[in-house]
Amino acid sequence: MKVSFRKLVPEDACRLLSLQHFLDEETAFMLLEPDERQTSVQQVREMIETKGRSVHSILIGAEADGELAGYISVSGGELKRIRHSAYIVIGIRKAFQGLGIGSGLFREMEAWARTSGIVRLELTVMAHNERGIALYRKCGFEIEGMKKKSLYIDGEWIDEYYMGKILD
Image 1 (cartoon, rainbow, N blue to C red):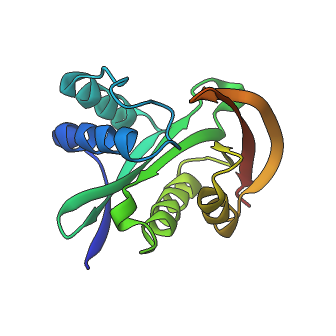
Image 2 (tube, rainbow, N blue to C red):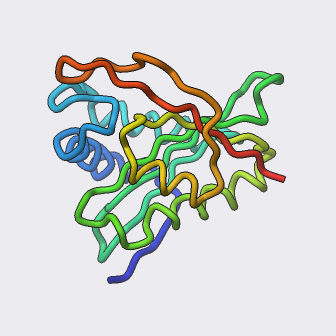
């Protein structure tokens, strides 16, 4: 299977939105529940354009055999005091997990971050998402804290870990 990584462009809006809807249905580890996402293709296009103009943000997609299999969204701070820091969201379709796509997305993102003045990378992850935590640790992230009762899913409280990585 041929996997490639690239910065997403506005023309990818429909494919990205379809991927996000698919992930909402497929996994409980993303923030939105099925049918909760109300974003239009135009709104996704505008979000991609905004990230594309930002020095501190990027959206990278992973394509496997021509299909958008995953993405990583990096949102950097625009204010002077947090301009060095960026928050990450990643999503990979189950059918493409275990193929190195997550590691590849992090590698591409980190290479970009190092050239963009980003020093701190951060994310949150549900405390029971063992696969996600393993990927983030493998990529050099450390647990920095616990966000108790962060989410309410299917009648249960879910804790999240704060994880971060400092780029040297």
